Length: 384
Image 1: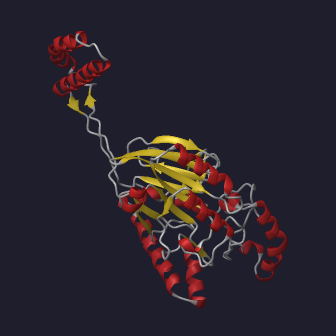
Image 2: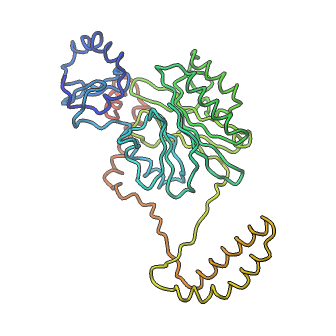
Image 3: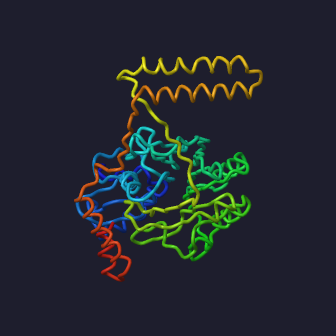
């Protein structure tokens, strides 16, 4: 096996890799040559037999080859945010490089769980969110809305680990925030008929009890499109949960059709409440105007001094401080020019050629979903 291959080898589980070598490889070699093996996603059991590609396993160093799907997927939010009104992204299993989510514009804010499996991305145009905490597979921030603070939580529940640890972290966090509302986006990996699967599972039953015990509301629609889809598999592992009756009533949920370059689909959730946006006036102070400012401010000094002398309580001092700030602002308006802050929403790297390729791939995806048999397999291979 050659190590010039897929960067996704970092996600392949050790046990699955060992089983693949001892059991599956011998079967595949009966029909295919080693150099025809193209890729393996996470479980090392999903293959596409195309020429001139090979595979490497977990902890093996990769050189070149196909970029990981997660790495490509994290480059798409910028394009998506420019097309529809999005303020925050909750992501699970992102491609991380240098301790940060790769492909995200530098001006955007981002937070990661300690395992790097769950993350939150906020656009620079949003008010500075308040970071709450980062646990092993969970991270959270707080944003301001007109109906009060809302906590955004991103969580990842590994299919190879017990649910209890991450579930306990989630329960502790929800207890910590008290009566505040919360939106939770999580890759649960817990099949249940409540969110689309044909059958229940022990993990799904545990998750149902957790949702009920924490008084959470499930936004997923039972008959929705799969949130996860591959050539030979589909599922609904991604759940969106809400804490707070009012937020559950106003929030909307939808699985989007945009290509994400990932096995998982984009899920668009709208809170249905206004977000408080604060804008700050900035003045040009590098081009003079200081004498003019001093002239106007001298006229305000007598009244400011008198208010300071009359201060006897904390409330009076607060009011005098506010008056001083307003006086400075008025003088700045008279002395300095305003600084215009340009906010460009144009995505510079997206080209017409990429747009054409995107439309072609969406057409192939639709054909793969609407056909059967060998024709469906042909389209699925093209899409993969």
